[in-house]
Length: 131
Image (cartoon, rainbow, N blue to C red; front, top):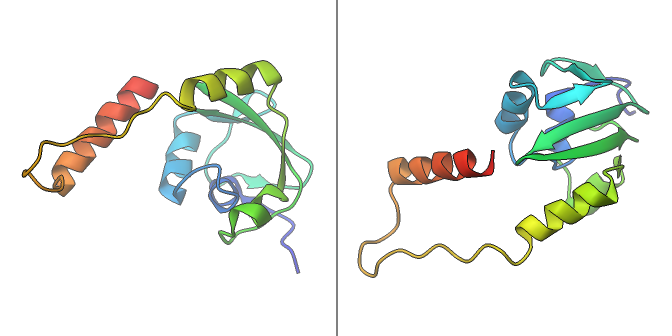
């Protein structure tokens, strides 16, 4: 039995628009998730047929809710739960920016893996650049 309403942060995470639920929650709190131009709180209950706008990494993505799920599923199953209505212009901008641009990160030989603190600093630095 499918739910009639699901929290927006949980739905965004379960259909793999965001990598983690906490990132989805933060996106809602910072005003990057909208319905009809209004910012949504993470606890907003989304229903089937609603159109959601998500600003992610500086790109405005638009989605139509087709099915409601509250558990994270595989990418192929997740794609059946929403329809991507993002304009071609925005998608081309997104693809031009990400595909083929990034090169692998390189660390000097012999210094080992980054510590948890170093990794967090790198993530914060990347977030500042892409926002």
